[in-house]
Length: 550
Image (cartoon, rainbow, N blue to C red; front, side, top):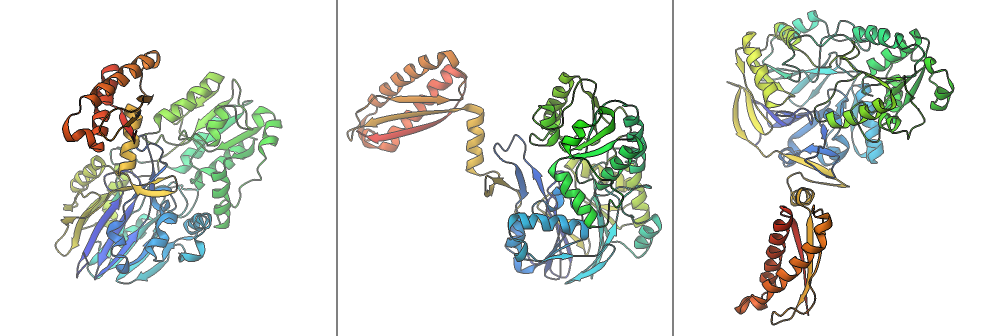
């Protein structure tokens, strides 16, 4: 599919899910990619940490891809860059804070010299083929969140990226209502918009309000050692915590390598200018309990992060009865069990656990309905294309947009090729899309045989049967059987004895030419062992047959 004299939109990731954002715009024979993100694996992908969008569609059209424009530095927007940038072979564009974090990723991957990363000044414009692009700063839970105004011969796109409205953002200067209204008055064909918080009837709230909430909560914990966990990438929150520590007479201690990295990049980008000198973890432990505030990673229950190690007593920072942990972050769906595990460990120590349910100590980085309505009124798009959400979020934003006066909307999902102009929006066709996983050091299909086999092993266990059979089909050895993952425990020996007898009978019962057909013999053994396992355990294990000639 080569774009003609038209404007096309195609999501390969981030539509129908939250995370893994990869969007393509097509025009006059060329493609532009906006963001290249990933997501973290869940229990459906055993043994896997990272999940990526399948980029086969654009990889097959690599010569028509002009570049990758990155809106901001969250992992679901830049996390796949070090894994695919070389293969795509096109320039990457990002504002300074985002570019520095991407540079670190490329350095770690050892490919920095081979990737053309272009640092774009804030509030600047660039031209890439038929696409004229302007960065428009919007508030978000990270420094340099940006929308993109993308002008094409067939109309203007306002691509929001992740955003919110914030009258007191603390970090950065987002575009004003007047500036956004001016963009809308120039004419906007399509608003491609974040759907994450569309069900929230209230505005997301201000970082300034979080500062007041944290100041009040930490101020009420006099004499206690306090740990605050938040998203490392939320530079405004890091500034807030520094100010809270100073205002409450506490020294600031940083626990977590990702926090150290973000603080370094933020300072290099001109942020956190008044960030105080921090104390080491050993120094923090020597201070009176009420004179230290520890900023820690791990609020999502990550097993190797600082908070999990603090809760498990395997970290230099120690907490005792009466100390407090503040969760200044939202609970990402899917992390409830991991977070609960850590909170239970803390509760067992007698540590007080405080979240945004007890006070104003966190606000979302995504827009609620009042913010969406405000943006619609400023941008005045001819059409609305919801993205960045599960289907329920995107369908709801489409309904909300229509109720707010946007006449044309489309609910698309990953792989839907949509023509925006002329005469859009409408779906043209579906293209190949899907998921890839980083499994060890190998990127492979998420629905491939390896993971399917691993899921079966995890669910049902495995049994191996080893035996020798002569050329004329007679059993020539003892049948050796071993089982892993079957819930038999004390009955295991009895199961193995019965399964061995079943296999002997089954091999003897094979007649005719099948007695010399080794594949037929192996399949007979496999089915016999599986039936025995199901009879004893109720499970249908993976059965591996090792057949040798005796």
